[in-house]
Every structure is written in C-alpha cells, then in structure tokens.
Amino acid sequence: MYLVDTSVWVDYIRGSETVVVEFLDNLLLMPMVVGLTDQIYMEILQGARSEAGFEKLQRYFSTQIFYRFKDFQLSHESAARLFFKCRCQGITVRSSNDCLTAQYALENELILLHHDKDFIQLGKIAPKLQQKHFLD
Image (cartoon, rainbow, N blue to C red; front, side):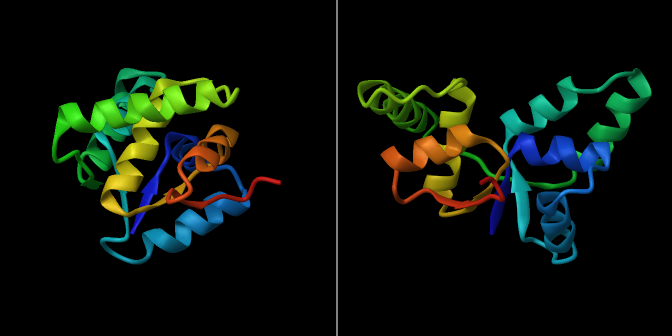
C-alpha cells in the first residue's frame, strides 16, 4: 500500500511526464493500492486555479482511500518528535506537514511515494519510514 505525497500528485495533475508519475499511473491500475491523507487532500485542493478546477479535484480525490491516525493527539506528538529529532541532528525539514505525512506512513506501515528531499532527510531519523522516490 502506498501513501502518495502532494509532491507526486501535483506532477500527476499537471500531466508531467516523469518517472514518478509513470510509476503512479501503474499503481492506479491496481485498486486499493494508493491513498492519501486529509492534509494531502487539503494541499491538493489549495492548488486549484478556478472554481471548476476545485470541484474537479474535489470529485476525484474525495473518492480515494484516506489514511487516518488512530490516536490524533499521540500521532501529532510523534510527528512533532520527528521534527524535533531532525532539528537536534541539524537536519532542516521545511514543513511540519512533511513530518505528519511521514508519521501517517509509519503508523499505517505504508510506502511513501514522494518527490521531496525532506522525506529522505526524515528517513535518517526514522529508519522504518518506507519510501519510494526517484530522486538522485
């Protein structure tokens, strides 16, 4: 099972012809393999450029699998701890949302499909974070 980060969905929505989009296209052929989180859904909708675009994104993504935290408070504390551990190690994570996304993947034992170097950095702190990316 894959948790697909916003960084990949944006390229997919734009129709980018990249290796990661091709990989996602292949995953989407298999039902129940790909999902997202409420925060990724929000980030996708925020990228809409018109009302019609917003509604189109809403129709498509609202029907996808959503992964959620079992214990909201504890999970947010764990995500904050990831951010804190990174900072203590001199690792800069640009967005606390990336820590939440990583925590979703960790808790649900998902492979995080992304195109974001911050997750590679997070993997140094959270070695159990399963990742798939095509970054150099």
